[in-house]
Length: 411
Image (tube, rainbow, N blue to C red; front, side, top):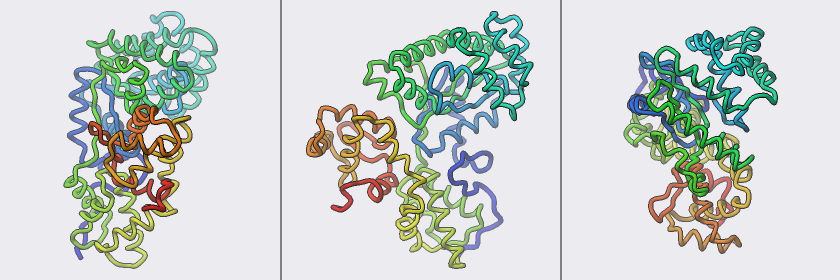
């Protein structure tokens, strides 16, 4: 056994976005995003629980010299008017952006009238952000155009000191909400937002748009992929195997967990992915078992705990969104999507021709396969390499096999 030294480095944070010392091994990613932001706005893509929000918070927590960064989440925003409220509240509650208010008096009348009463009645403190949003929403009412007011506000930000970065988390999810609600209005919003970005291409305002849904395949099906073509792309990748093992070792050391040589490598091998969140769920379970048995971690412990605890009933709800998202968002493509995933549980990778046959045998039209795969790829259930399709990672395949696959009795 190797007794770990005094705890340091990343703690085993399971679920919440990590910050500070717990944000481990992504310094190169942060530096690359900043380099891209120097050139223009950026679209950051990553599956759910892959560390996207943690990276976004890292930019907000430690802005580069000359930059002011504000982060806000729009996952549940349903209309452009709601986005205007969220954006305005985030800007007004930011200490360094308070100078924007000094220019409201010279701003066009509609914006000045809307903001003036709200600011004097509620104030700008972050602990009053909820009250601020309510006041902004009530003051907006059925009045002026969201597009005009939003652009006026962005014009003010163009005159803030230095560069301003607006970090908008779950932007693709919001666009999906718009498309589900009214497709024509959603496309109008995307065209407007592209025009706003392009008019400010050389100015000081930038956007970092992140999300756990990749909206681009859906826009491609609508023939509207050009609406995001101006954005720099940054896909957040899982850790490489060697980095994943180093991460696990660092977490075990920080937690003061006694373990024999080989435990870190075995955790990565069994989880079959380099996603810190998935690794940390397994770490949490093996450490709990070691504490229960009052001993250090052993290599043979890892696989049984993964099968019994991580993939067992106790953690089913933690990953239930993989199952529920199909029912909530796929509509008539829910059943073809399940048929595709069930086929990939039995064998992978599979060609699109084999998957088309599987969909047809399930009583669905093979003609919907391309659209189905576009959605599954958008939501990071699957990866496509040319004509071949597979689960996005081994952990997701194992979870689907255990909890959702109707073919699991044939495994």
